[in-house]
Image (tube, rainbow, N blue to C red; front, top):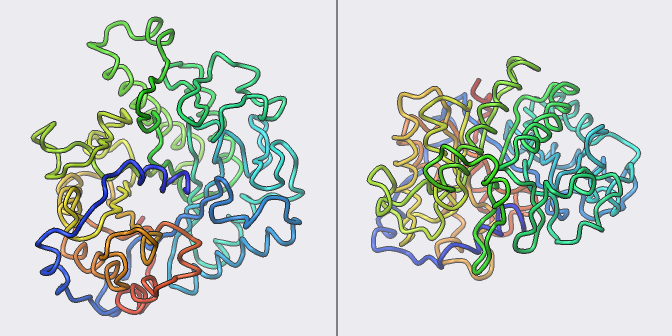
Length: 412
């Protein structure tokens, strides 16, 4: 989903270089704004973990935090976007007065300290006032981006239930293999859904954590207790995540009918070398095998309302070509009831160390032109709000001028 949520997984990807087909892809011409659909997803992620996009730093006065939040909403409306995906539960904490979890430390610098206002309630109200949808973005299992439980708020559920917690890599995680953890996560999320008229509940790509070389996610006890009847640990882990998705979807429908449920997974389900149904890619991470997230299954079974695969590669990339993956996901969504939007790596445009394709301000506009050739693609979501505002090489401005010449309503 950050420096953590999205960029952390990017570090797991091999360095990508332009393939021979990249030059041909450069000839793709954009549609004019007038020619584009009048109904399509035009979204932006607004990340709060580690103060990635908002607030600019912890400890700002409430009025300053609110002003910064409103500025992001104003910018989205001005750029003719129609949806803000707001991260409201970044690390098993909350950006609303939750009875289940402490206030997020991204607000005050101290987890559990009230900021003196209600960011989620304000975001929903002000987004709707501007004609924007507000999708509430929750990370289900990440507890902390450090490994010290003593730094958590004194009443944090992870401290009250230490057997729920797994230390792995540089973080702390709830154990997805425990049914009581899954039930707790669901309650924490549904509290926000019950309180606020959010347009959707949104998960990103973090289920079981991304692999860390030389380390093992220690869920032996949970597997011994709950893994009977499965052919192996991988199948059991996937069943745990499947249950989270099914149960969350059903609970959202029960608590607030009409609120959608969307997921933004890592962009590669499986490589074709691992499964003939997979994509013609050579990614080192595969969501099915490494995160235990059967994202293709969720789409085909209509368990979720929309999917936003993070296609954070350029057109012609050697190991994972954006064009190849758009076509694969369009085929995956064909005939299903799941809307397909594409997650776009705006944060890579003009960034140091990125392949040369990302130094071209037209690359992102080419993505939208290419995706428009697939009727299953119903729009795009951009990572992230900081880059939408700063737009260092004008990539977002080019998208707006080429494709967003008129306003559009989000798909329903």
